[in-house]
Length: 368
Image 1 (cartoon, helix red, strand yellow):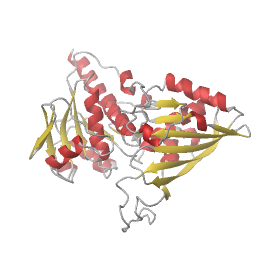
Image 2 (image 1 turned 90 degrees about the horizontal axis):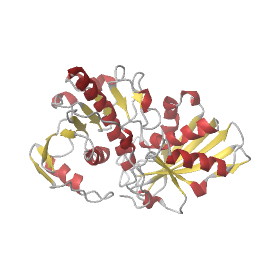
Image 3 (image 1 turned 90 degrees about the vertical axis):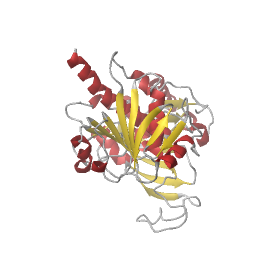
Image 4 (image 1 turned 180 degrees about the vertical axis):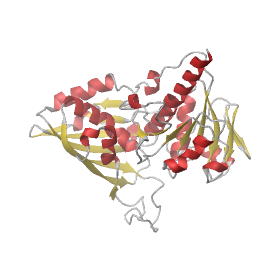
């Protein structure tokens, strides 16, 4: 894990009633987030009874994905307990067999043995499609991408997860990695000082949505070789913040710059505040939140670190305190680091735990 911090996981705040059966989790889409979400879930098994019972991805066979799960170019080798093995239709982790399939459509895979499914394919983002899980008896679906439909709650753990209502929200989304970076910071600044308006730029690592060498792409900038340029592009993260903070609707916007690095991104935020502040006052508020109510989600760093120091950092957002700047009293500039893969995968796993354990707790109570 990242040597730059030793913050507790946010999952430590999730209570687990005694005597509950193991939570059964499925993962659809076993790419970057799907595989890292499994790693995060496996770490949570140290304290919580859960089983990953089904993995599906049409992009390869079980042997390929077992290898990619164990050997990760960014986050290093991972081998739980007795290790990872595979056969034609399963991946076995530390002696636990997990069914594996390679179907493209939700309905072509048997999800009936899952309490909650993490939908990490990045392609299934409408309730019309996602309802196919519920039709098989899955209680909850957690989507690892924003879902832009009313009735689907965009949840940023530590910020608005208290709004989750089991009776209303069978499909939820963990928003996006950049929204998870922004939201804890905005929560503190909005509550303490008030935001009139603002903008952000995420200096974001390359992802598999880009091209290695020049190739056709609907975004002509993303069509260019990802390892050779700084690539300005779009992000919906700033606008998506209004789903978390409705009072900021229309007052935040932003851009992205894709950079030729594999991991650890940086968000540059500029806010016009409702009142005058000092750099020291802002940093104190952020540090207090990082050490208090947002511990494990928000971090606060005073050392002169660089992006690689935040690789495999499980927090959603880490303030770079030396870079905090106040201009003319009311204009605030902040930098926040984030591991756009591992931090987000942890929040996605924790959200799956939150919604799934709630159902199991209710069932256990009814049985008594």
